[in-house]
Amino acid sequence: MGCCGSKSETASAAIGAGNTKVHVGPLEIDSSGVVVKPKFNLGIAGGSIYALAGVRDVRDGIAAETLAMYVKSYASSGKTLVEFLRQIKAQEPLPVLDDIIASLPQIASQVVETAGADIQKEDVLGVEGVVYIYVGAGVTAGVYLGWVDTSGYRMIGAEGTIATGAGLGVTLRAGMNEDKMAVRVVAYLSNVGFDIIVKYPQPQGK
Image 1: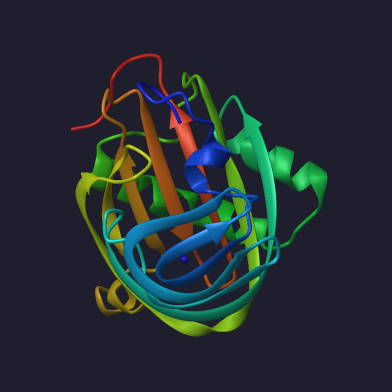
Image 2: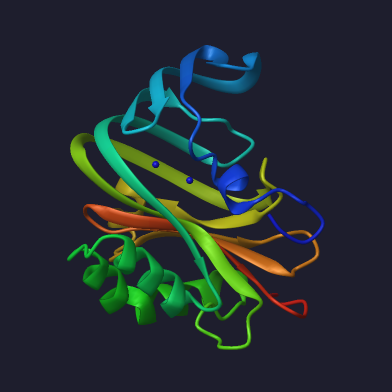
């Protein structure tokens, strides 16, 4: 499905949470008005509904989807990734969080490989983001080639059908921001995922 360093936006702003948007071809419509973007899709996304079909904003990667889902999101922050997940679990004891926790070694290994950053380090400045629980149907495929996206991160990875075809157990993309002081990680399993930003005291990555 998608704040730090030189950009002063928050994780929620980078992730795009909490704002309902209607998509009509290249137009994106929300409470603030209409924006024209290099995309072509139809549907609505925001709150607990994600129903979109078409090609997403090509500035963020090459991705297409046909999805209709009910989504519940939980925003949190913590000093480490483990604390971030514990804060989410404290909000609501979600059994599916155990799936993410069990997959952390694989996720962390892929992030090191793609972005050169260790998201499990204890000496990070903090972790913030959103966990998503979703139910629905559809297909998606995407590839992210490392150019700077609209949130300022050089995302690398694959998702959906492309990720499955590549033999990846987790749909994942990750990338550093421009000054390499933060990494954004978007990871999804079958019905749970997270979109997080990890901040570092020193430049990281490749």
